Length: 171
Image 1: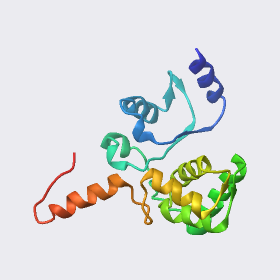
Image 2: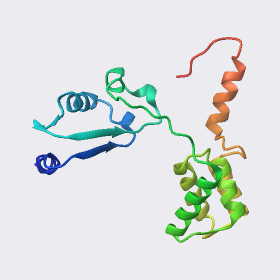
Image 3: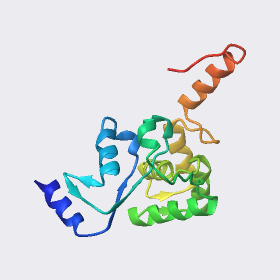
């Protein structure tokens, strides 16, 4: 019933449908394909633009991927942008953070805001004023090294290195 109300509201407007992490909507691709092809949702003709984002293009069915007429690959955040994100997240959470601690979180978060925010939250577990010491404690607890690699990342790399002259697949 709520979906019908939503579709009715959308029917009266040109609108944008945005789906973040579309790769996680497994089994729903037929719904999206039908909506994109027929320009309908719940049998109502709609004037819409469908935008989706993913960091796992390989998980999308070709039939769905081919329907998107414009595909963009976005660059990772710059160091400055990441530090802005971290400081903003800290401010919202009421966490005081030193500049060098912010820089360290930025370096190990691989340019991914969600990773930086997760590390910041773990740093807050060790104190509401985030210093280099609290960052180091959090990284140790999370098993993240100075390059941002997790213990699992290192195990994968070691497995690949051990088999480098022998083609392998990881499952």
